[in-house]
Length: 632
Image (tube, rainbow, N blue to C red; front, side, top):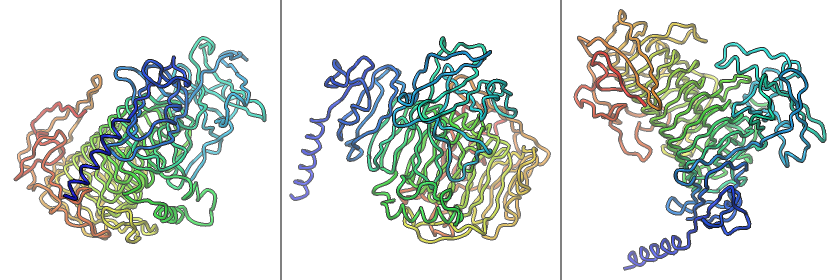
């Protein structure tokens, strides 16, 4: 009877909460003095954000909203969220920029505008420069601000002369576009921006400049269980987000739990699109501010400070980021240090990251995660981003599965100083540099690997490993290399360009010097790809070069590939948690985040595999001659 009473009281509490839940409406013709009803909407999203309580929703109607949304409250649970949503079928744009008019022509193509300090309020991105741990500035200043002409960002220059006489940057995606340039000067009262618009008159076009450091970010941590659904979010003056710093992107979770970010278009951030990262009190660019310690030692200290600041599954992480398009960001499409743990990243299209290449650093990728503990990266498309997925430190219980990663000029996947278990299965890695692992305790299963694979140890860096399915640190170790399971992959061996390291090889030969055991079987090697010393039951076809094409038709992507019907396939087995054993350092099984076993019995297309002799590679039907496979 006592249990029934508890259930009854819980039901009454939930029903009461739902009965009092409110839906606030926001519209560009509204007023913040209204009551927020559908007939009397508010004008700003942030005003509604100060009122919303657990269970409430904020519906935003069509239009452009230039504001920073700083939520006051979070939800209580998955069932009592605060939901921010674009009205169904309506286009809602949130911008971190303002329109600027009144440009004055100084000479052919070059215009200037002078803006008083009052224009910017509390933050002026033309006084703030990008900086932080592992940032490379190429010996010049890069302001967080940006100038846009009809939605396209211009290139900042370090002198006015380079604006007046622009020279296109070679070796980048848009060399002609790089001649559209800007430069700024600030004093105590005024910010002056010069811009070369060429033949465009800025007073007749849409010219915007970024004025906010973010678009959606709670200034206080522990604002949990928010949903952000259906917005276009763009043009924020975001700062470099090192793992040792407070990480603020255009949409930022800020050290909390249970956000859902979905169905959004996120683009044109100076540095980062979405951040799922840490907050400031546990350290902010600690290496830049203290050179007496190595950066990796600083980060170890940061890890322990975050543990003392409630870095655990009860309080932090467990976010869902899905069905978003993220592009035109110059550091990452998505990053997160510690705060990404236990999260699900799925069905996102991330493209055109770090295309301007005006600065560099060790934190640039389509997805860059530190401590992706029990995080799943599934079914994403990652294209033209420099480096595709970068799992740096503490990728334990992480799974990278059924992703399409291609047309990247660095590598598709980089796994740095992790101890595993890290599962990489059923992916299409189709760039010339496919995989780099400076880690141990991993598994590569049923992948299509077109280009180079590189493995190397790191005997000088101690990095943490954890109690299974927990953030609690179990110990520290260097990277010996090895402890890998490599089953049922196809290596095309097509890479021929010179890589940055002689450790890059086609196939498994890169693993020939590892210190820890290896388990390698059921793989196929074509063209220049070669097996390694641990290989068993493989097929080697050095005289067969497999060509493939990526065909984009609207929102669909097709892989066109042709294999001669093989007279022999390697002996394979259906791979499972039981097959893979235990990662050496954390002594953890290759299992799901809830501790349940995994059987790799479906392919990239979710087709059921042959349980007795599954076909190598990510697609069970890949050896059917000439194929045109819809991969997105």
